Image 1 (cartoon, rainbow, N blue to C red):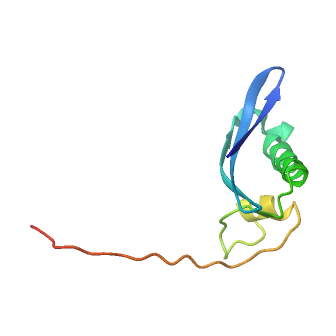
Image 2: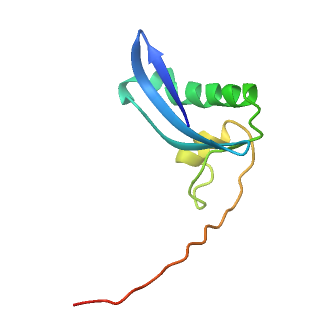
Length: 102
């Protein structure tokens, strides 16, 4: 795992957590202080994470998730600003049901 922190005047204003596996860097979770939005700390962290990944021979970066109906707004707009391509992925999970007691 890699935790990146954006600081301004010695104070943490944003953080992003990435997992690493088999040459793939996956954007897991992040947060920031809204009063620092105009500094664009999440943009800085995303860019720095790509540079870190390149330095450490990461072949692929997965920004995870999005809303297919809203391709040009919100989180999709943010993620699209860094290049790359949108992929549709399906996640299959095995569900097991046991006895139900009432």
